[in-house]
Image (tube, rainbow, N blue to C red; front, side):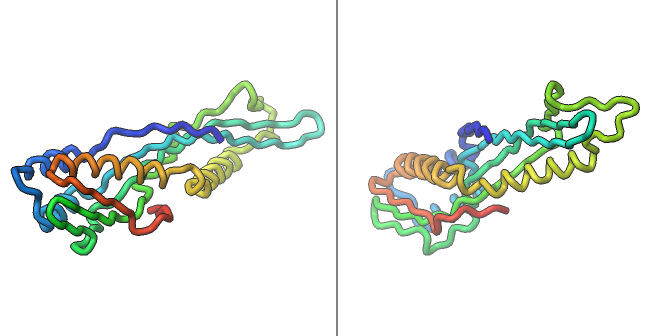
Length: 194
């Protein structure tokens, strides 16, 4: 499996503007920080493009039949800020400690438009060729490819990268809001998939 990782730009521009606009000469109050975090809702901090090659072979007496295809899954991960509670934010002067929700898979897409049959390695269908790999068999291969990608999500480093990017994002936002000491942790370390 070939993995391409692409870190996406932070999509929470509204959050940046609203938190930054509350900066005056004092640090924001706890209720203000919580409401602005919750209003941002879902913050996607990483996007992975996972490429999977699927294949099948049918042994036949006269000629074996082959099928090869490249598929892609698009995975976005981040945190759901609407899950932040009052007890998750502790403010003491210019010091803030935030416990963020666990990293989740916010979006998983395995679109048929991203399936590409590798013609040079796939047996062509002739007019009298009834021993080819059927459409139903191909669909089963695509479904198995999706299951394999979903099962490998926990091994792709998504949690670690999403946490790192989220921590970086919030540290910069909170510093610009007047906090000098910032502590960020996550509720649990296991990735959740929706």
